Every structure is written in C-alpha cells, then in structure tokens.
Image 1 (cartoon, rainbow, N blue to C red):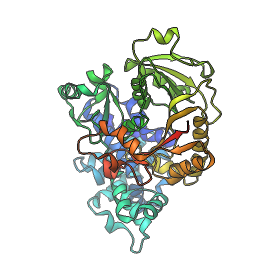
Image 2 (image 1 turned 90 degrees about the vertical axis):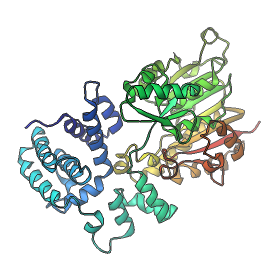
Image 3 (image 1 turned 120 degrees about the vertical axis):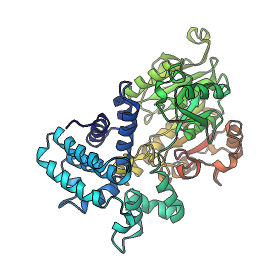
Image 4 (image 1 turned 180 degrees about the vertical axis):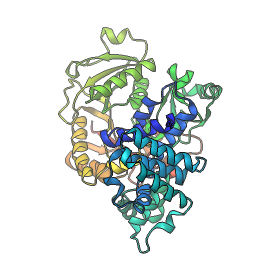
Length: 481
C-alpha cells in the first residue's frame, strides 16, 4: 500500500535529523513546498516534531516490547517505530490501523523488509496499551530526575541541572513548556501597521493576534505564513519575541556604527539596521558562507540593501558614495571568524554578540537539541563565548554599549561569561538595569512590566514557561569614556 505524503515527509526529515545532525525546522521548511496540501503539511510537522519532543518517552515504551533497545536498531526501523508509537499514544484522531500499517510500509520503503514483521508486532502490542498513563508504566522507586525525564521526555542530566538550579516546581513547568508547540511569532517591519497586517494574514486564512511581549509582534497560527502577501512583500519576518527584544536593549540611534557578530539568520540585524538608518553603518558578520547566503536572501525579501565588503575595508564613516546615495538602511555583510581578533579599522558605537550556545532555551522550538547536547559542550561553548566577547569589546568605542545574548538557561554560558569578562577588563562595566528597562519599555505590550524581564543583577531573562517565548539571556555592557 502507498504511504501518505505526510508520513513520508516526516520519515525522511527524521532520518536526516538523526543521520546528518540537521535541524528539523529547516528540513520541514524545504520539504513543505507549495504543492503539499496544508493538511499534509500540518500532519508531517506534527509527527516529525512530536517524535523529536517525545523521543525518550517513546523509546521507553518501545523498549518494553523489544529484545534490544530501540537506539540499537537500524535507524530507519527505529524512526518507523517511533513514528508509529507517537501516533498511537498522542494522536487519537489517527486510526491505529493506519499508524501501524504505514509504519510497516515505511520500513519496506527503506528496504528493511526483514524488519517489517517486527514493526508490525511491536506497534500492535503498543496499540493495546496506548491509553495507559505514562506514570503507570514507570518502575517504582525510580530516581526523581529519571522519572521526570521519562514523563517529560528530557535527558536526565538536563533534568538534574534544572532541579538543582530551579527547584522541582519551576523545573517541571519548564519541562512541560518544552513539550508544547511554541507560538509562531512575527516581527513587523512597520509596527504602526500591525492591525492592517493582521487583517491581511486573516484574509489568507490564518489567525493573528497581538504579541505577548512586544507591540511590534504578532502571533500567527492556522496556516503557512510564508505563503502570504505580507511575507512576500517583506512586511514581516518569523522571529521569536524574546529574540526581537534583544536588539532593543542596545538603544541604537540614527547614525550609529553598529556591529552584529554571529548575525545569522539576520532577524536582529534587520532591527539594528532599521534603527541606525541610512546615516548609520550596520555590519553583520558571520563565519559560515551558507548562512551569509541565507541572510542575503532574507534581507533582499525585506527590501534592505546589502553591500559586500572585506572586513578590513569597511567604511570608517558614512561619508562615501555608496552611503550618501542610499535612501534607506544598508547592511554590510562580512565573512569572518569572530573568535579571532577582529580586523575592523574603526570602533563601533553599538555591538551585539548573539553568541553560539547550547540552545537550551529553545528546546520547544528545536527539540532535537535535547538529544544531541552533551554536558561537556557547555565548557566548550564558554571558551568560545569568552573569546567572542573579548574580541568584540576591543572594537567597542569609549562610551559605547554592547549586548551579549544567548538562547540558553545555563550559567556557564551566561552570567559566568559576563563575570569573567568584567573581572579581567577594568574598562568595562555592567550597564544599570534601569537603563536597559527604559530602552525596552516603549516596545512592551501594555500588560508587561519592564522590571519583570530583568533579574536582581540586571540580566534580561525570558522563559517558555513564564513568557511563552524562547528562553533568552542578555547582558548589557558599557565601556568607560
């Protein structure tokens, strides 16, 4: 029997996530072409992301029916079993027969015919206990971290860290939030036209409502944003609200020289360039050429001019023909490794270091991270982040402002980085929290108090459990005059 297009897409995406360390969101975006019906696209997305979110719980259930752990099976067989188990336990509208039979056909499609009977037998047994609560399947006396990890499908080492840091109630709320489908947030190029853009999205069959955090954001659901007129016209870009808030903490002014390090995918660059305007200079630096290529495409869609220039040949000011002829913001793209000393010949007034990190604040949006990340990577990220921040500060003008941000909850990547930098650099200080709050306040939704987004040290923090956004950390640093 033929396999549905939705399950075929989900199967192929999951195989590539596991075998190529690819990201599901990027693979789904590529696979869900306009020719794919919306219902098929929705089911493919539901199955692929659902399997990734609930993989540990699915494996626990599957292992009870297997002679060896599912992780030791051939990858196509493991993926087909997880897909079938997910549909049986979580998608009650899917007939059990369809979930089982199509999983068997997927194994055959992958040329693993010898495993077809195994997949059929295991999934049929699981279908008999599909309504059993997970708590009833766990062994008595299971350690707390293991129990919560199985119930909420997270690695035990992450659960242990969060229990120690946040306590059981807060850690559990975070685990639960990571398994909810995150809202699709949109950044508006012209916030004053929010109601008009919302109507255009609704005319295209989507639901649109104001953002939870920012007045410049919309939340969309019920369809494909990338197929709408506002998207193609460059009026909106897909960006989490916490991510949208980070560049606002810089307080970029018209005419400022602005540097955005580790700039891809470019959402924050757009905000910085818009604030600096045609009289300013915005440089977006990125080490990976393929990510720079994606940025060029995004900036072109958003009608932002792009200039190519070697990093050591950037204009020192706006007084040059390319700049004076510009009537709108322009972004200079530079390919460079920011972990090495930066080659720019003049300092910058504002610098954003949105550092590569573990991504533990994005486990709802990128569930595959939880299965790839290892605890030793936190120390490796810390070393990289220190180098990035030191090199960026060397390019900051006296009196300038720098924002360091991550989408991580882990202290090794956040406050520990800031503390180490300040301890080793007497010319740098942590910016007052009230300054950051004042910069952010005009952009916040009416019900959001600025002070609620900063901790007692003045660090900006968001959480999927509290704010319904990705988990972000940001710290503003100032250089002495």
